[in-house]
Amino acid sequence: MSVADIREGLAANLAAYFDGIQISAYELSNPTPPCFEIGFRLDNAIEFNEAGARGIEIYHLIVRGIVSNVIDVASQAKLDEWCAPTGASSVRAAIESDLTLGGAARTLQVTDMSNYRAFAQPSAPNVTFLAAEWAVTVYASGE
Amino acid sequence: MAIYLQGVGASSFKVTVAGVDLTDHCKSVTVNMEADDVDITAMGATAHAHALGLRDDSIELELYQDFASSSVDQTIYALLGSNSGGTVIIQTSGSTVSTTNPKYTLVGIMNPYVPIDASVGDASMMKVKFVPAAGGSIARATA
Image 1 (cartoon, one colour):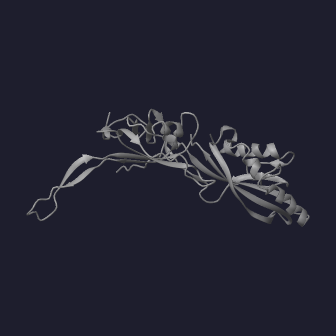
Image 2 (image 1 turned 90 degrees about the vertical axis):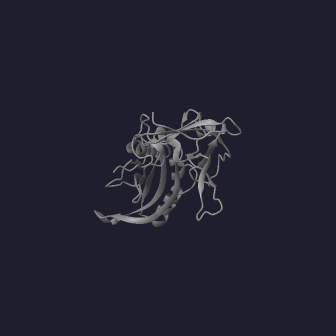
Image 3 (image 1 turned 90 degrees about the horizontal axis):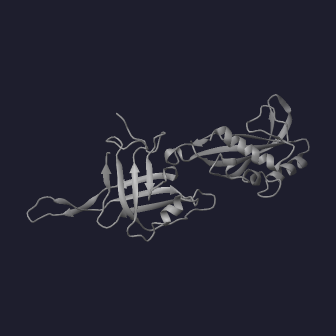
């Protein structure tokens, strides 16, 4: 099991729900919305030694969903669909559709959604995106 | 001067219960070897006098619960209500037992068993305490 396996597993779960949009297992320098990218949270991203023999390490990742922000209400409505707790457009349901990430993890859960906000890339400050972040806690073996 | 960090590194501590290796589910281990403190103070003494009485050992484990086949729940539950108990072996390292890697063995009975005690979204943990079956105590071995 590797960090790459976890990232790829999360991306695969998203891809099974969301067809035809960019899904990256890594953070993108030039996202093309609508899209998803995956990264680590800033603090305590990996908790080691949760069980003996490297049996359990806890990984804290962020799945970030980005939509364009051309029309304010429509953009928020689109992102709100992704924020639903269940359903065909639910990011949480997509991430939790395979709790083992194809064998890379023991289990996982989506703990919360946060940072629902508009932002702009420094390279293109006049183009704003709308984004939300889903915090994912993954329990996986360290071996 | 070497110090011992529990469970850190590839050769972690090793926990075996009734022949099943539960190391990769074990978050903490307490091996307690103690005897009764018997007061033998007699008249005329200016201070209390103590003597060691009967041994009263125990081993406590904190485990991530797992209902998979031959895992935590099936192993621990099988010992509930048994006065002959099961053999619990704690090694300070997963490597060969030696003078610097001692092994602690207890034929212990277990009570109570609390298989589920968690709030929604929490990792399901359980604590179990083994005390000696009749007349027994923890045996320390270096080979």
